[in-house]
Image (tube, rainbow, N blue to C red; front, side, top):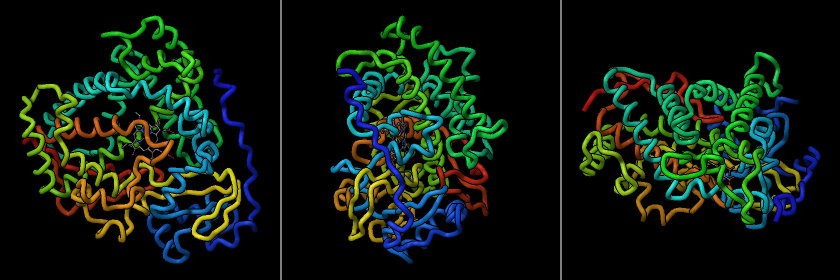
Length: 462
Ligand code: HEM
């Protein structure tokens, strides 16, 4: 079965006429720029104000288009679970990510998406994951040792960004990438920065201009490397990184992925992993710095593993860190790295009594849902006990959606837990973290949560 024959028929859409949505309460703000500036200024407050004024289905106008926000767990379930195949991710994410990350997994729809997802899944099975763990473990241990030697005040966010980039270079591209690593990393950083750049045209000197040039460099690198990796084959010491896995991955009919597919999937995977991990690991450690009692509990849990300082971390060790996992989940609740998710309606549908026509851009909002007081009492408080098995059972399944859900549920979810727990193991075994006196971190929450000043923390050897 060739990929072309099963590709979903191209869904072409025309955004609905403005007056076809006027029955939905809302406020589209100024002509052309609409509500864009309000959203950028304080996205959480903007949504909460709209929800209080108009309810959980409302109309707004952002980034040049009218869209409908659908808030709360039921909306998340409708859009993410998407039993009726009503919502296109291609035409939701396309205008944001399409230029730099075309045909990434999240930008494919329905049958075609399912086939590609199955082909990529081999890279996330337990064999390859064990090999990524070994790389992450070594890289994290070495970096924590450097932080320990330096000790004192540091900016957590840039340090975490550099670490995540360096770890991705080895676990995604392989330890022997050599001299090209800096060049590739720079090209990749430019692409990621451009994905959320306000100026969308690739003009010289703009972020988008650098992003498009970065994509060219990355495409050239992958194109040159694919035959080399394929020739090496798999096996110990050869090709255990994610890129080499994809070079060997096949579709259901046994055909290898095409060069273009590998390029598109690799670029997207690196982007999907990068800012999300940097954001979540920073907010996780930031919460532990602000809550020493939880930091102590997690350090006790890590100590109970009984690992010598230089012993490697195994899968089994990670299984024995339930409190650490709960604390990481709570950090993801408070600051979800993907605070909103766009889709486009393929057909007319009705939600909470509102008729919404085909072609409408809709958005769900984990950031809002994760702070709804009816699902999360005292929503701003850091309380990992919200994630005991009992508490999770009693809650709406779509009240906590940092990794999305349904067909597009994050493919790297276990990779993310693995990196977070491995990081916690080395960090807490070696360092105590606190916030400077009289300092309150200030975060920007959109497009990806990030501390405005880099997040000042003090680290001391334990
Ligand atoms: C804490 C870290 C992460 C968070 C919060 C996160 C969040 C998400 C979310 C919300 C989606 C779904 C978006 C949508 O449906 O519109 C997604 C998709 C995806 N993520 Fe992650 N992600 C994280 C880390 C990673 C990592 C480490 C990788 C790769 C190693 C990865 C790979 C992917 C891929 C490939 C998709 C697309 C899945 C599909 O469309 O089938 N993510 N992620």
